[in-house]
Length: 116
Image (cartoon, rainbow, N blue to C red):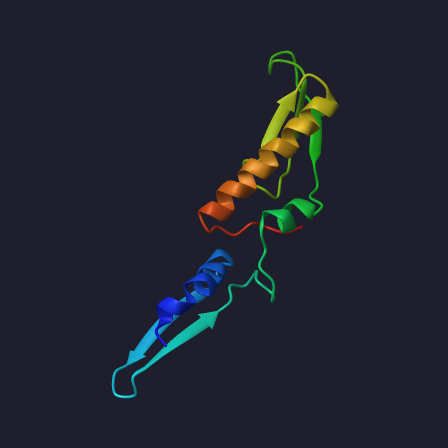
């Protein structure tokens, strides 16, 4: 069988950030597929749903008038994931939207998402 027949499995492994290499042996007419999971994959594909269920520490602080007022919320472990709002509740609600978008982007670009 040719490796093309396993494209859907290979795509799932790539989405799980596994390292995949192919070796073709023409004498034996055999193709070997080597799979090495990345450090953060432990037997299961970690998708957006998985990461959104994790409990990340949120830092919430009031913004000074000089900073525009309102509230600032961030997830320090997710570099660059932050939001603000007029109230603490609004800042946190906006942070959850930002977190989802941040994680979608990381997964799309096959980047590692830190876990708490």
